[in-house]
Image (tube, rainbow, N blue to C red):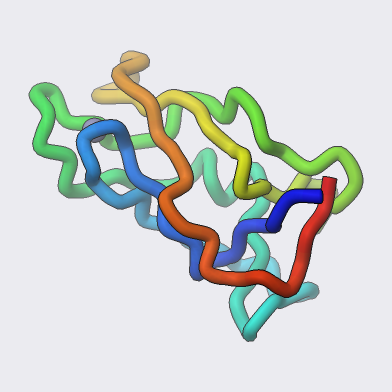
Length: 108
Ligand SMILES: [Zn+2]
């Protein structure tokens, strides 16, 4: 079992810029934070990457999607997630989970 990510999680690109997450799935919350689902993460923005060209979006989620827990038919994202960022539509670097900030809910 691996911790599930919520809006309280911190994710960063390889250049330490935060991924700005927008979550709207309110059916199921942990500590009053919405769960982070695949589509939410794919829509995340990176606004302050110092690289040139700067990462500005999520290109892919290469691992860490739940096989058992879904919200609105979207798999939730687990603490083990990792993938690639994009800069102006071109695959650029990697992103990773820095902290989960919840310990109540785990899934596989
Ligand atoms: Zn970056």
